[in-house]
Length: 87
Image (tube, one colour):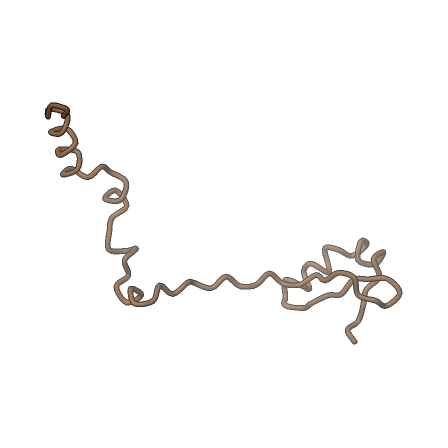
């Protein structure tokens, strides 16, 4: 059974307990030796594999401005469509 720290002790030493959790330790808090809560380290965020596109590095294939600026061909087509009469 894990060691359970009393709620009073946890309130008194919260910053110390958080540092211990940051170091990878799981701390159980409770009353009368019964765990009621846990202070644990935050899980490490791992990169998401994008399957078959992973080797292509799509995110680096485009410059940021290319993704934000309007597409020239679409803009021309839109402007040309404004000159067409409505049916």
